[in-house]
Amino acid sequence: GQNIDQPTEMTATEGAIVQINCTYQTSGFNGLFWYQQHAGEAPTFLSYNVLDGLEEKGRFSSFLSRSKGYSYLLLKELQMKDSASYLCAPWDSNYQLIWGAGTKLIIKP
Amino acid sequence: SAVISQKPSRDICQRGTSLTIQCQVDSQVTMMFWYRQQPGQSLTLIATANQGSEATYESGFVIDKFPISRPNLTFSTLTVSNMSPEDSSIYLCSVRAGQGDTGELFFGEGSRLTVL
Image (cartoon, rainbow over all chains, first blue to last red; front, side, top):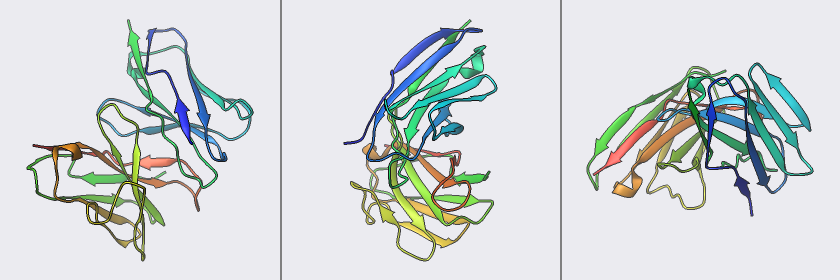
């Protein structure tokens, strides 16, 4: 079957760094997306990885290891506005997005 | 990128009634996707709306319950029929950026339905 595993909730301090891990099992693989979703709002695109390694985009970086079925999202210099859910979503062989339940990130002052 | 407008943004509905959600995109797209997100849950794909053909429904979703229209390349509607409290959810319209099947998804603002 297809499965996504992310921590349900994480807490971090403003200004710190946090890493949100995601492991996945899919029928084939065509890349992996990370989305941010603030409470009551629609998800917004953060990053896309299709090759192994780290993709950096400002304060956010995303890493992929295809052999391990593993990705992480790294958030630096945390701000209060980063409090949101972070959704890991790999693409399977049919370009179907497989959505996890997301990780709720709580930022404390 | 794509700008997607959805309405209504929220509604409170009575059991047994039906509600139609509209989705308007600012560019022509081949496929439009309808998702449901129940409280605290992941996104669940309901169906893919293709212009000029019947929508493709995912397992667990049927046309009688969730009829979809796709009259042109920029517009689609999803109807939630004969609603029950279990249908209380956020319904999201989305499209892909870029050509073909690849590209990230852009989402509308969502329609939050509460069924009493």
